[in-house]
Image (cartoon, rainbow over all chains, first blue to last red):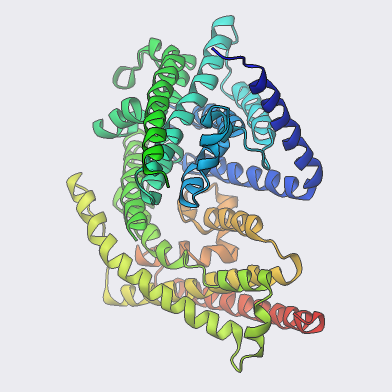
Length: 271
Length: 246
């Protein structure tokens, strides 16, 4: 393994530049912060309003459904903070600007995720504060095990999110336009993860567990944490909640191997 | 086109799954049957195709790039041609609805669910009038947002925020009838209810006789309010461009 020093230096520089842009675009920063608050605020308000007349959703109260949201937001904002720019890959390829990543001496994927821009950890901070409030609403009993499971769900969940986005972005090496596919995956991710998995039919449950395993980001860990493990029809094996880091590692490995194939393909077309 | 149709199909299923779990767990609602909520959700998605046409988007871009000066010199009112353009795009949305409706009905039929037809031709007519009024409220709201660009230049984030709040208070996802009573009253009095909740409630026969007429009249009032507001603001903004020389 070659020296990692250039990587650390580049990565530190990447964050230094991000914070410099923060100082430069302060007004923009606040606009996006308010935007984030309104976006998530209206999603959470929708959950609350949906369940106003219907207090139970397959054994989940509205506070618990909001907990699902909070857990998902934690992982996805971690992914957004660390790996946001992977979504730009199809755009780089389409514009014919991807080649520059191939000729530089650092790993191309590393270069992609360290493209400086207006990337700030604001959403991660808001998501963490929100989670801190919601864990009180559901009376989460803190133990070392609970903390470990949460950490695993957050980091593993971020990698699941990253892996899926990387895989979809990699398709751009073969297909120039994939807006529809991206849209479907995004909808599965943001709309379908809002509610307990048990409300869906077998096909959707399978898809969300083993193809695009978004259920491991929030539903399975939350089921373990909130003891949704002995509820008759909706019982969930408590072990599943612990598997998020493993699923994250597996899916990320698969996505990375797919990405490497995409890179080879790109070389051969030489565009 | 495919993205829109696919998005409708996914959401029809999502709302079906959501509401069937909620109705099965919590029992029936006195004022809103399961069939009502499924019909409401499907219609909200379909009329959403019309409402999501953002015609004034062109204005926003042109003001930002400065090209608006050329349009202002032409011998036609800019708001008028933007309106004509929006109506044209809404016509295309009708084609999308014609494709999406059978897909939604077929998808629901697989689960043994059916959506209701309007109770009478009169209700159907009132629904169409109400959607048209909702379209106008929505158009003038978009135009108002676009007009603000004369002063702020960048409005995309703000407009998205207004969209989230609009769709919430309009009852685009959750019918206003399900909100806690005080919130329902506020939301129903807000102009946003004129966009989704009024036409959909009319379709479901929730308003009869005088109540139906007053709902339509209130929608018409909102059309006038937003039209006057947007056009007045447009006048002021237009002059600003002329003063600055484009």
